[in-house]
Image (cartoon, rainbow, N blue to C red; front, side):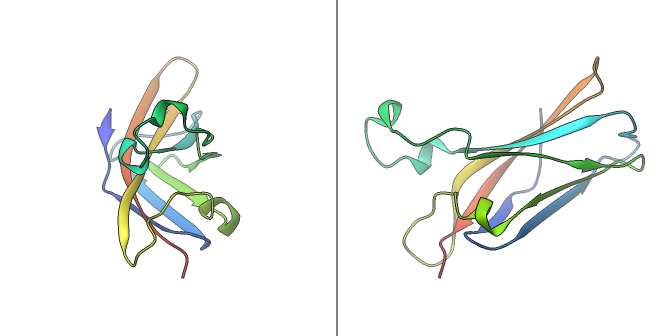
Length: 118
């Protein structure tokens, strides 16, 4: 799994992220980005019985033959992310991007820093 630079998401705001894999053509591939809460995002000691739904959101990604992968979230989707009740971005989730052409699977992962809605 390849680690990507951190993603920054503000609750309730439209959001986009893209990255390029040099020398990789994504022609014939389909992909998804799955966002889940980070273990640090769970404040209770009984995190295994927490009623939060996982994953937070899963979306399709757009890719091209030049190696570009793009991810976009709507304001309604970013509003679902957990955030701390204070100013700034904090690690509250993670994202896994999975690309497949039916035989080959490539995965990428990034930390997700979330800022609470104003």
